[in-house]
Image (tube, rainbow over all chains, first blue to last red; front, side, top):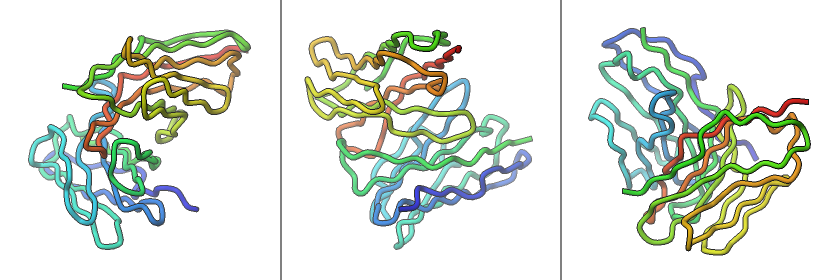
Length: 114
Length: 112
């Protein structure tokens, strides 16, 4: 079974631009979560989607948004990019929401903001 | 709020040495606990998990036991290999699910 895939793998943008990242979950998985990883802040939860609905949201500004499609694929968007948005963005999928469910991670999209 | 604290790295060991990476947590209720590993340039891979008190998770020679009384989930391996060099993350799942709260990560370097 194919794992979680994320596109693109690398991205370079300039301040003020916007960016869209894509995530395809493991086949049959319906829950998708997004995380930001930086050397200073570590791994931080962005949001989680299930059945096209945002179930949970982390403490990030409104510039960060996401959505999920009917096939469970998810996208996240960051508008008005800032230098501090440079990070590895990780997507994870699980078969369904729940505290005991295992989240399986993709390889990440590395975003550099200049 | 919920939080996870890991021992600081980097940890440097010789091959075949015993490994312990400490992890303690603060949480409401009894969350599920996880250890993930991240190799350079890659995403996170699940190493093991435990969903209730006294559960022991194990995989590839690694073990961790969910200790409710000490709110801990320490990772151990009896004999490390060079290929175990990576960053290890302890995490808990909030009660709603879908959100993992991670420790800061512990970098392990194993020398031949």
